[in-house]
Image (cartoon, rainbow, N blue to C red; front, side, top):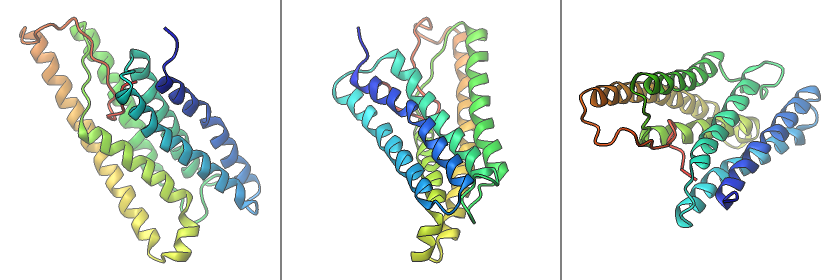
Length: 218
């Protein structure tokens, strides 16, 4: 079976990460070329929109696949990680809107911790069941909103003088939800291990693929 349309959209999103990075790097080399940052913003918006589109296609066309279950969260993580690092490094950060290093450490650390938890759960139980949770979806939405808010910071501040305060609120909410995601999935992982150990898992040989950030299955 070939790639589904949803999977093709997801792969396209992954491929767009490179142009996004290049635009940010070029914008850092020549700050006077503001259009490069606008270009990065445009690519980012396309990727964010495709994140919703591939999920919609997977649901409406019944194109959920294991490949999509792997690629979709991978695309989100690669995009958010790359964007956060670029927005935190002084040379590539948006003037006046540099992302704190602690936020990058928290977001990337959260993803690495969850990945480690899934691996340990698999080795302990021999099975893996990852479920979509609302808090995971919220985390992804907040992270994308945070990146977008930083990219358009200087422009929006001219229209909305209080925009820096709004951005700080978004960053705070993003960090808070990131911590909550870790706690929820750690608790869920421990309960799953206990259930499998007690034989309460009806058919533990079945693997349910999902994303720790609640991304869609395609």
